[in-house]
Structures are given as C-alpha cells and as structure tokens.
Image (cartoon, rainbow over all chains, first blue to last red; front, side, top):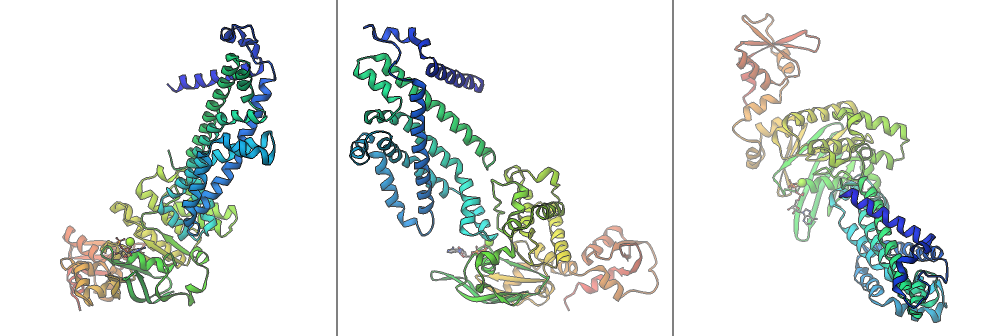
Length: 246
Length: 317
Ligand SMILES: Nc1ncnc2c1ncn2[C@@H]1O[C@H](COP(=O)(O)OP(=O)(O)OP(=O)(O)O)[C@@H](O)[C@H]1O
Ligand SMILES: [Mg+2]
C-alpha cells in the first residue's frame, strides 16, 4: 500500500515537472477541450516562471502568518496573556471568514496592484489554522514534564523553548501544512490584481473561453497543493520521530 | 541541613499543610509518610518553592529559600516528581543532563556524569543513553528520574514516591543505591513514600503526616516504642512491630556488645556485620543453629549472636 502511494506521488511530481517545463508535450491531451482552433496549451507566458512566482507568494505569506500566528498562540497561552485568547480567536477567525477577494478589493487602493495585496489576503487567510493548532498543541503539553521542568529550575522562557514548543511542534506543523495547502488554491485570485501566479492561466482561459487553459491552471495548482501537503507531512513525521510519538 | 519552620499552605479556606516544623540534618534521610491527601507532596514542593508557602519558612544551610529566585534555588535542589515526569522528546542522556546544562557545565563533564549515574542506577549507558522515555519500562523511567535529580550533585534532594513503580527486587536495589548516594556524596534527602517498610529501611528520621499536620518526627525505632499518637501505631502496624524493631538493629552493634568470649557449642551460622537482627533471627530459625558468627567483609569473626540475645532486643524497653 505504501509503495503504491509513493509511486503515485512520484508520478504526480514527474507529471507536474514535465508539464511546467515542456507543456507542449501535453498538447494532444488538451486539444479536445477547445475545438475552436485556439492554442491547446497556455502560450501567454512561461508556466514554470508562473508556478515559481505562485509558490513564492504562498511561501512568503505562509512564513509571515506562521510567525505571527505562532507568536500570538504563545502569548495567549501564557498566564498573563490568557485573557487575550478570546479576542485573538475572534480576530484570527475574522481573517479567515472575511473573503480574500474582499481583502484584495480593500487592499489595492492602499498598497496598489501586484503581489502586495495578494500577500495581505493570503496572510490573513492563513492565520487561523496555525493559530488554533499552536494553542491546542501548547495546551496539550502534559502537566508532568512541565512540572518537572519547573522543578529542575528552568525559567519560563527555557520551559517554552526546550519543553513546550518541541512537544507542540507536530501540531504546529500540521497547522502550517493546512494553511499552506489552502493558500495554494486561494493564491490564484491574486491574478485579478496582477500578481504573478498560476491564476493568470485560469483567467486567460476564462477571458478567451478556453477551457483547456482553465483546466491547466487548475490542475497545476492542485498538484502543487497536493505535493506540498505531502512534503510538509514528511517533515512532520521526521519531527515526530525524534519526539514522543513512536 | 533543612530547617522547616511552621510551614503552612492553604488553598482557599482549607489548610492542606498546617504549621509543620522539623529539621533535617545534613547528610541524613528523612522519610515523610502518611495517607493519601495528607499533604506530603505539598510539603515537599514548598521546600523547592514549586508551591509557595502561605506562611512559615524554609532554610537550607542557614539561608532562607524565599530570598533567592525560585528557579535558581531549584537548580541546587534535586527533585524527583511523583510519577517521574521525564521529557518525552529527549533521550535518557539528555534528560539526565538537564540541570548540568542549565548550570552551564562543559560537555565532557556532563557526559562523564551522565554515564556515572546511569551505571549507578543499573542502566547500562550503551543500551539506554540514547533511548527515549517511551521505550523504557515504568521502573526504568523512575530510575532515570532519580538519575536526573542527582545529576548536578545537589546537596539536597527531594523525592516524591521515587520507587513506587518498582518491583520488590529492583526497589530494594534502588533503596541501596540511594543509601550509597547519601554515603558517597553526603546528600541530604527528603523522601515521600506510602510504603512503611521503605520508610523504616531508608529513614534516619520519619515524619508521620495526617491531615496536613506532622504527628511525630522521630527515629524509626521511636515510632514503634514511643508512638505519639494512635494514628502512628495504626500506620506502623501492631502485628509485626517486634520484627520491625529488630530490622532496625545491625548485627554488629549487638554482637560486639554482648559477645560471649568462647564460641557457643554446636553448629553456627555465619552472618555479615551489616545484616539486621531480623535477618539474623530468620537465618537462625531456618538453619536450626543456636548461634551465628557475625563476620566483617574480610570474613573475620566480630562476635556471636544467640537467639536469646536477639529476643532480648525485640522487646520495647
Ligand atoms: N493546587 C491545589 N489546589 C487545591 N487543593 C490542592 C492543590 N494541591 C493539592 N491540593 C489538596 O491538598 C491536599 C494534599 O495534597 P498532596 O498532593 O500534598 O497530598 P499527598 O499526601 O501527596 O497525597 P498522595 O499520597 O496521594 O500523593 C489534597 O487534599 C489535595 O486535594
Ligand atoms: Mg503526593
């Protein structure tokens, strides 16, 4: 079973890479979707460059929201920060319930077109999973090792660094993984405000009634999401192996 | 030396430790016994300020513990938490190295110390140093917990039911190890236990707690011969108190004091000088011999013990 899974993932990676580097190879596959005679493969830009730009925005936003969400999660699980937990929850939750498209619309007048409004939208959208998992992970740290850490004479920051965070790390990474995967898809809307990304392919398809383009953009985005999900999963398992979970 | 003065802890309206005072001499072992919920852990945790006292004070080697930052105080005091509390994400060696790391020891010194302690506690470093706690049995985990508490050579060690999860054989060995640690490093130890046999085996002094109060703080023998409260008698047990008393006396003390000049007639058993009178009596009953030769480590005869001489010791004076 595991062998089949690994083979599938490898095949997906190979297909994605081939498609991004030499998309014309797939021309015959997409040709039936646009009988009008329009080009079957996206030709208004380099697919690989778009995919890398897409990934770049997603990763930058993920790093930013992870830093903010983890920091906030740490603060509200300290004794002195506990009363800010409900407020933080509301704010972070708002970040996710507020539609990213609306964030874009509001951000453009402030920061202009391009990557910036997209980054803001993805940042706000990606906070919630990381924040909630950080809080849950820190709260789930068993009382006994924490008590022992206090008994050994660790200061609060030493306890956080050497006991709480390592034990919560698998949960935090799971949150980052969710956040990243959601944002790979969400990032396609950035193309409506002229951010470079795979959304361009989809929008070009919509504008010219070319279903092949739409499918290509969608498939490439989806494959990237799946592969990133797996990659972070591997990282997570590596962390867990040196942790309590056998 | 630990001086505890009118130490009190109240949660809301309930007093769980009530004006407890006693002194633990340097290099001695005090055992705290009592029923569940009597306040043993709370008392212990006030010594290293894991619980802040509501009133009273603790002095260690003359210094008031309240005058020092709590986390620095705790680095000087070994602590074995009830139920071990090992760090699940750290190896055995890393767990043991916790306090030395906090104190900034260099790596070689830490490595040497970790190895020494694992060997002392019967955990072969080659097999166990790199294992994670979940790969150990409950008893092995407890021993790692004890090693971790001793790592930075603390002058004072607090242990909350450290041997609870050990089988009788390993437990007896761990108790021997603790006595050895005390002998070798002169460590002052306070141990909480439920087990009266353990209290009698380890304790120079025993504190009997009930409902937050210390009913008696005394030598183990005195708990049997001069109980201060009916609860003490109940806890130490009536049925085998004569045997308990015998178990507190070393063969050598009695043999040399009351030795006849000539060896007794008949077959004699041989017992080691550090055997308890209880063990000697048991040996005499089993072998049918009227007397036993008490020998030292080199096998030299120090004196003789007869059944009659032992029985004379078994009555409370
Ligand atoms: N943080 C706390 N808040 C309120 N009550 C507490 C707290 N800690 C302990 N207690 C109460 O204090 C009493 C003494 O608890 P403690 O843990 O010292 O008992 P113990 O003698 O160690 O018991 P055991 O042998 O079961 O470990 C108990 O009744 C307990 O419920
Ligand atoms: Mg207790």
